Image (cartoon, rainbow, N blue to C red; front, top):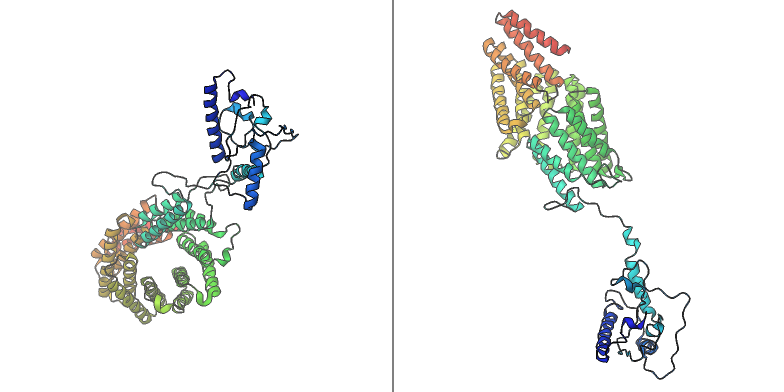
Length: 556
């Protein structure tokens, strides 16, 4: 670079001196801030060598007033480039061709002979200080392409104020929403449960990065989404939207069937979730396709049985409880076909699974476990009733009622709709047994209690009082009508029957719910009873019309 870049020959001496002092100050700042950045570790050199190296460099680089003859440094064919192309140099673009000057801070620089010196003499290109060269290389590597090749972190699909942009926070928030949704299910608040599980799906909907277009990234996210979908299916089924529930539960099953590279067979919690999802699918299908429902029940039992055998005494209580519930639900299919021997076998296994739990003394105090025992006792009484063993049926049903009464007293201040529902169903089972003994006064008393429980549930649940509960309430009215008719009260029986028929026809007229076989069968039963009552009252035309409707429903 020409010397007049730093000094104008036509300038006055005073101005030249002031200019030189400014240049010296700037060069001193450059040397103290740019040459040895504090964040780069220095090379370890023995103290004696440092002193010697500093003396040699000062003499070779900047001792311009020495009386020794000047020797121009030899040009190198391949000079060392201290600033590679990718290094960013701030300043005027015209300075890019100017080689950097190495200035020792220990001695000021004299410019007295600057006019007569060549560029190389003023700014020697001799990188004798190898330490300075290594510092520049380290800075270059730090800004190199290696770090730019690291992919960017995945972020939430909806970042912003109030949104959790962190993956871990999103997962934790989704987990909380899922737990809230599960709690809403237990409280029979199905619409609120749907909202919570929908929030889970929204939180787990990540941006498409070209590799995970389905939105699922990690193993934990896939499992969490599957659990949320299962809860959503349970709520939809409770609201009578079985077609939607089937589609959602199949999506959940697809997520739980496999995960690339994961050893799922060694993950009990994952397998338990898979089994529960299979159970949910079987329950949804039980009113649509018995064959498919049976297949899913067997698959769920295989998963849970394998877990109990594999874990042995370490088997988790929740696994045994879900195994008992699966056996209990599967037994319902056999009772519907009046295969009572097979049903009783499943009920026995369901009770044994609970009783053989290693932690039985502790978990038996939990309301969910005691409610399951009561449910199994009532189901056993129902099977014995079908077999005609009335006394045994009364005994079993009485045991179930004792358990339920104790639970109601213990949790009377708690909102437990499942307990209330089981109490109403057990009263209906008791009424069936007493109807067989022709004790219709007792039947009416039991059914009145049951109807009041259903009405309380309906008032509390409002729009969450779904088709399955409406059908159970209609069956209660039908049982009462049958007993009233048997007692010689056809007019009163007609009123009870009309209550049942109205409920069932309203359900049938709703397009957004599935017309299950149970709904159609119960409606046909109600119309048939209505025809019988009309006939007794001498209205044969109305009786024939009711019978025709029943035939059309059952023949469709």
